[in-house]
Image 1 (spheres, helix red, strand yellow):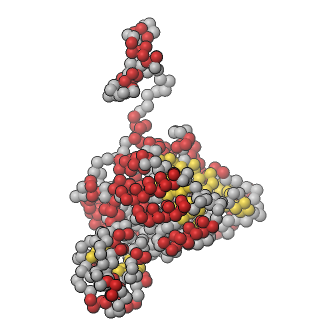
Image 2: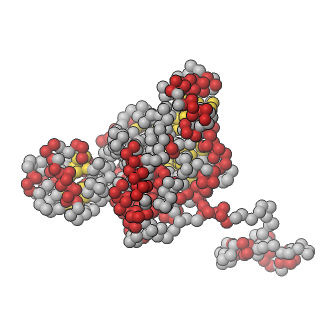
Image 3: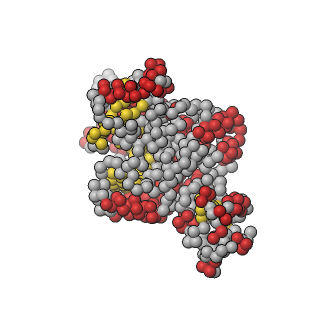
Length: 501
Length: 107
């Protein structure tokens, strides 16, 4: 305080060393803030000389949020005003769920050849299509093959690759760890509760394609329909296991449940004495952020259970699933601000996807943009070994390299952990923690002592990204077991049983 | 896939279902409700809400009610949307589970 007073009360030249030009003052670097009640007294303070070069404003691109009526260029939404577009029910109801509706919505924006390609993609996909108008409006339909949102949610036939020979439908073995339908208990103190099996969007790479999103031409699913009787059975199991402190509510997506059910489920879980933390996992804010702003009852229900939990000394938070900077707009920023001001902690889990976010530049921008909105970047997942999306997977090396490039670009608590959710149910491991990684065969060997101490787990890189020698060996089925034995042997784990036989 | 309102809704029309629908895909006629098959997201929330168990998945529609699949599609295109619950007809209880209600459907 005294230093500032001195600066203001004396002529500037008396504070400036002889023969030196006075540097900028705070008023020069913070224009328009002269009237601020606290900053006013700093306005004449000289700014210390910088040791670093001036930063190109392009470095702040993460702070620019797409705004305006960006949906109007889509023929189907040309007449849609802001109030209608921000209505969460409009987003639900007008979602594109068929090729015919896509064509009707896009008009001449999409070429007939592309539409034919989509038809071919859907015929083989394990997930149905469901695109909110918000997502449709953010896709660059002039370049749909490169667009990161199209790649995530709308399959095409022409880019599909054959599945890896070691791939299974429920790769994380969630059903094997489910004592009752919709409740998976894998980690010691945590359970996964799936109240329903529909989502506001269907990710092509869904790890739960064994159950979520309804039957497709290629997959008949184990349904997890929302009903109180099943919920009570699942919660009865949770009540019977005093070691469980942590519940992840996912699905399916609580975004699709009416407010009264969100409230009911939240309060029931909070009432169980040993439950300390509830995480609601939702894709919703990535594809329909306006729901937070316009479905007042739903947002109120979320705040109500978060506040009830806080009063009991328990945490209720939201886990989002943003994968690219492109899906985050001014609508998202406002929605996240509502959650932040309401005291709900929001963390983000990203899936690393080829041609979507598999570069240091994209991941850094995503991390910074999330941080700017007070959404904590928590995980970057290695893409699960899911059927019919081989062209979306990357190598373990890609994940490790991106982690190395991103770490240090912002604060550590805003830097996501790069992990692989081990096929066979080993749980999430730091991607770098492999016992051995053969970059030629693409086989990484992991252990998960806290989950299953006596098992060994493998992740397989997509074959088309391997060096020629690795691709050649995978083309010969007789080599498959030999490559696996080699990898386990080099890891020094020969004889230890494999989680996925 | 879609859910379908079947025969037992006729003359009962409790409308509990419309309260829970996340996409407002119910449409209302004089004494019956239908689901718009292109709007239904297959979430099943409405099924346990129905006091007379009139809602089925397309696959589980009883053999003698197969025509209701097309009937829902046809009427949803004509009837007005219903978003909020309203009182059931005063004689709804008397019509619960009465066989052969199909002939009472008013358009």
